[in-house]
Image (cartoon, rainbow, N blue to C red; front, side):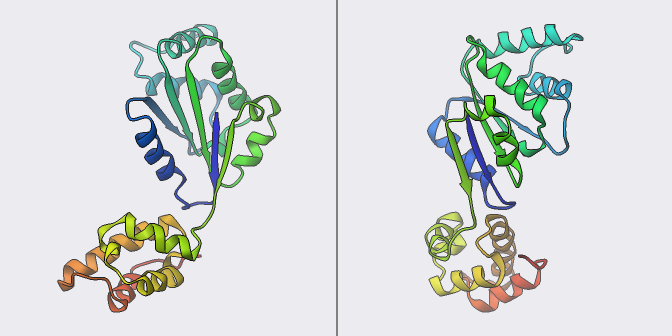
Length: 213
């Protein structure tokens, strides 16, 4: 088990997706994203759908659990639980219950925003099984200059001073902000016919962004 946590827009989901593709390109990966606090029954149904099991979901919890454990024992799988801060104690215990079964072959990656670390730490039987806790933070200015030129071709030829200008005035080390800024900057280059980012292009892109923190 692994927990990747940090503030909104810091690139947690992108990082997990990219790393899994690179490290385990042939792995059977299933992602479930929670937007509200689910019930344990809802978690069972999400797993049923994600695993693409045939037929109708079992009516009774014991039958449902037997089906899921049998399926998860067939071959190795990675389960990515995104926005895991929405999971309550009962649902976290249920994930541990599936993972703990001696026959299931399951790796679990919890990905969550604010509150995820605290929610998982409150469950000692679960948290003691988490091998890696990784907190993602804003990109530091020097990290921006290393990472952003690799992120998209429009930044590869941009002057470091212009990248720093964009980060200081709009992106603030937030990967999601950089994604939005990149889209608007790309549009500006297409409309003006320019081939390189400059501060005039960036100021136009800034005008299309909502205020950021």
